[in-house]
Length: 238
Image 1 (tube, helix red, strand yellow):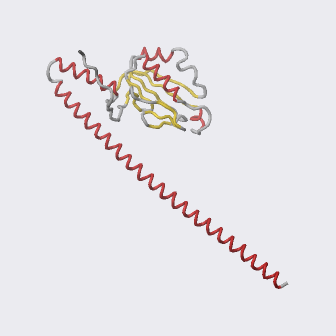
Image 2 (cartoon, helix red, strand yellow):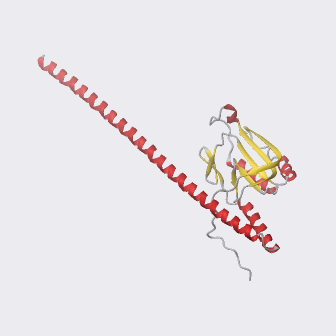
């Protein structure tokens, strides 16, 4: 009987020790995970700050170069008519490449998904990249001279595509669950005619509201990234 009691006592002690060891291991693992999470968050924060500084530095450089170009153009415009024509062509080129902010008559289009009416939850139909591409194509076909989506300038090198829960435009993310605003500068009559054409805005947009207005003045921001061509070269006339 005494031997049985001893075995029971030893068994209870072993169970208690096992429980204590397991609890201690879980506590250590939890503390380690919390420490790792904090370290990861801190590292991500540092990297984000570094990227922001790099982006700001590049934007400052672009602004500096644009200011230099403007000073050259101002100096050249004081010369003969041929030089003024060259300056005018340069201005047109800068508008086409999106390197300057512009304003003029045009249209503003509002796409408001159903989720916006219910507090912006990620449920229900959303705006997709092909919707935006379709509208941009129609605006270009109507000779729009400048276009932006959520104040992101659209250029000939702009990519519009869905990426997870976002749509990326010029490497910037916009939410398909929130209202998206598209601005276009161009001839008001042409833009209105294009937007009223059947199956442009009245088809294929189930689940969200599409509205537009024709305005006398709309402002569109510049493309704030550097345009650099490495492979395309002009063909020399022979």
